[in-house]
Length: 93
Image (tube, rainbow, N blue to C red; front, top):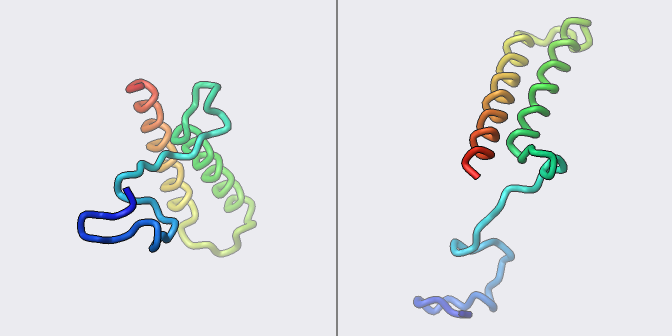
């Protein structure tokens, strides 16, 4: 199918963007074969980032960063939520 019903030619005006009929998949995690999907590994990464951020603030590396512990708590909460979403996806599959 090179033309739409309206007359638009897909081949002549290709922009390289996916069409509505194409499906996009999440990138595969390097831990995919070990029981972790992308959301689980990204959640773990966010939790580690939050811990690193909090430790850096404790040691004074960040200087006068306002409310750094609130920021790290928010990042940690997002990591936990992302990990739990990945757990739910593993159970659904």
